[in-house]
Image 1 (cartoon, rainbow, N blue to C red):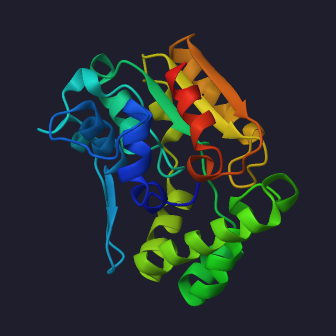
Image 2: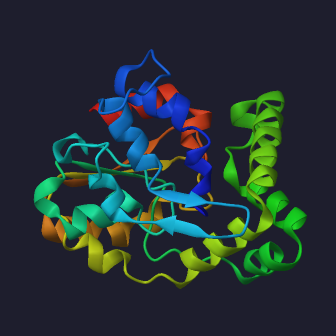
Amino acid sequence: GFADWQPLSQVDVFAALAVSGNTTTAQPGSRQDAVAAMFGAAVGDETGTVRSDPNDLFGARAAPRDVAEDDDGGALFGGGGRAAAAAPDRVARLVLIGSCAPMPVSDFVLEAARQDPSRAWELINKFSFAPAEVLGAERRLALEQRNLARMQRQGAAVLATDLAACNAWQGGLTAARRVRCPSLILCGEFDRMTPAEAAHPLLDALASANSAARLQVLAGSGHTMMEEIPQQLIEALRT
C-alpha cells in the first residue's frame, strides 16, 4: 500500500484482464481504456513528481458510468476513491485493493526511502508478498526480483515522495463518508502493509454513508494481489 506506481506497471495486463479476461489491448473509449484511466490516475516520473487527480477519471477517455471498479494501490485513497467522494452520482461502484485510512508509514521506511533507496526497496520486498511457504520459494523470489526491477526503473525520488504523501494524508475517512456507491475493500490474507484489521476504520466510514460496504479477505496473498493471485482478484472484482 505504499505507492501509486506499483499498479501502473501492470495496467497493460491487469486492467485488460479485469475487463475482458483475455485481452491486453485497451482501445480508446473502451471499458479497458476506462479501467486503464483509473490505474493511470497517478503518475510518477524520475524527478519524484507524483500527480494524482480524481478528475482524470472523468476525462475524455472514460465515460462517467464506466468508472465501475477502482484500484487504490494503497495510496492516497486512490484517484477513483476520491472521485467517488467528490462526484458520488458519477461512480457506480468502488473497489479498493489493499487499502486503509489513515495510512502511516514507519519512520525507518521513510528514512530509508530518502537516504538509502536500496534498503527501502529491500524492506518493501520483504513486506509485499505472502510467505514463501505459501507462494513457494522460487515464485516469491521471482516476484521480488520483478518488483525490485520495477522500483529501480521508477527511481528513488518517486518512492520517497509517494511514501511521504501516504504518511501525511489524513483525508481518507472524511472522503469515505461522502461515498454513496456500493463499496468493496479487498485485502490479502497475508498483507503486512495494509492488513485487514487496519482496513476496518475505512470500512466503517464507507458503511456510515452506504450500508452496501463490505470487506473481503483473499486467501493466499500478501499486499500485491494483482501479481500473487490475479485470477482470484479478477473474480472478486466481478462479484
